[in-house]
Length: 73
Image (tube, rainbow, N blue to C red; front, side, top):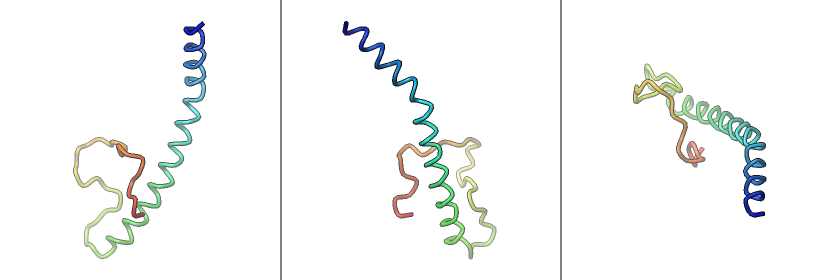
């Protein structure tokens, strides 16, 4: 009985995982656009500054580890 409930719970989680990821992706893109607008406004007087460019030059994109991009934006 317990095993069947665990399997049902896991199946339900797998079923909604795509929807949850899509919601998170939409939230992230919205916040990222706001952040880029903020960065463009703050750095508008800095010669050679490219908005959204990675300043660390690691060659790969890594999403933020926390749920927040910048809490003050």
